[in-house]
Image 1 (cartoon, one colour):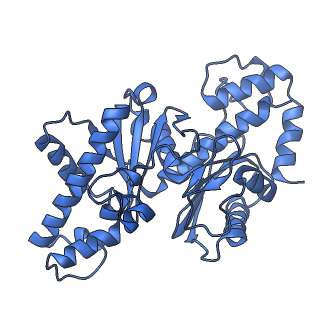
Image 2 (image 1 turned 45 degrees about the vertical axis):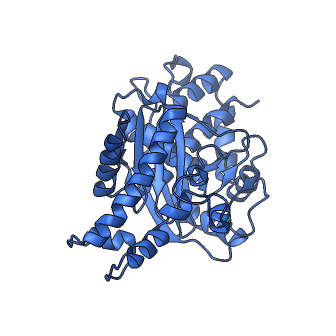
Length: 356
């Protein structure tokens, strides 16, 4: 039997009240635990036992796949990271299956969450806008992955899951108003994207493309072929574009923008490039704030997580005379998407309990 079969068999042994109460506990609700006493799902004190089963989360990007196995509270028990298969399609699905098998190592897994670099239709689960995942666009990913993994599976946009992870175990868990007013997570590296979480609720939009700030008409010509392909903002803030800008200004050092900014070498040309980047990001933050007014804006990604970048964005916002929102660097770092996938898995487990 698969892990899903084992989970369902165990769950059927619970009375209806027990299934309902366990689903509530998984969502963080304050519910009665009497129907769960002695089932292994709660501690002697009545709290959800984080060791009752494991959760699997995978963050799939254009260049790497990062997976984690955690307990029910998100404590990482095992982790794997591999390059994203360039063949796409079934090769990506096979790698996720391999990660699950390797990390679980005989432990019971209740559900999985998977983040993908594209838009997931909230109703059909069909993947769109995923040029870096050949062979998967146009397919209903939750059903496909659930069949492959033998588990309840939640599938979301990767930056949405980073926002969810940060809301659960990052800055959103530190007593801010993010659960009510929203936490915006801006990921900047190879490209740029944004997710917005209100506690466990994600802003998805009608087609799953809410937060695609790459398309904001900022910093470039929105009618140019490059902007129409990448999005206007992404066409002027993506990592390789910024390296090209650095070279065009006379920069002589080699490496990616991440390498250049980490070197700790005085470089006026790099300063000019980073100032232009910060000004463009400040306009993006200003636009997001005008429409959504989130409580927090959290930066992540290989470039976005650099302290000097976030500091410059704050300075640029101050020069604009605009209210400066609370800017933070992700507490979860490169695990934000995978931890968000785990949170989505936990919610999928609750959904499975409530189904007849």
